[in-house]
Amino acid sequence: MARADNRDLDAPKGLSGRIRTRRDSDRFGRFTEWIARAMGTPWFLLGLTAFCLIWLIWNSVLPESLRFDSQEYGFTVLTLVLSLQASYAAPLILLAQNRQDDRDRVQIEQDRQRAERNLADTEYLAREVVALRLALRDVPSKDFIRQELRALLEELEGTAKDGS
Image (cartoon, rainbow, N blue to C red; front, top):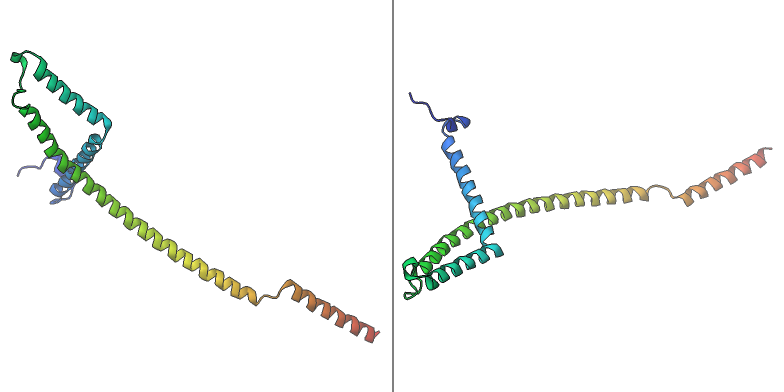
């Protein structure tokens, strides 16, 4: 019986292919995001501009024997190279945007759950405050207690005078 290679031993039987595929797709996703970020920088635009200028100068100024793209045909090879770059760039950027949309969707769901918890906590605290206010209505005020104590004191003084 042939042994599986070491990469398959780190996952349960039957899952190693799926796990590796998910890792590979995640790696490819990170690569597409890197490409999308790199293509949106001024350095990429400057580099692409320098590449095109060098190409045009090389195929316009240098002797015929060193040229590889004809100016007579409108720099066909340069056009093909730029078309190829654009045809790969567009799907890579779309893949990166899809991954960002997925992350945004997860973030929105987490924000919604957090908002629901905050609302529930706020409602609970509001109910508690109302319950405290209702309970404090039944608590006698300082003025009421003073008035009652004065009345008792007067009553005690009145019975003390009558009893002496």
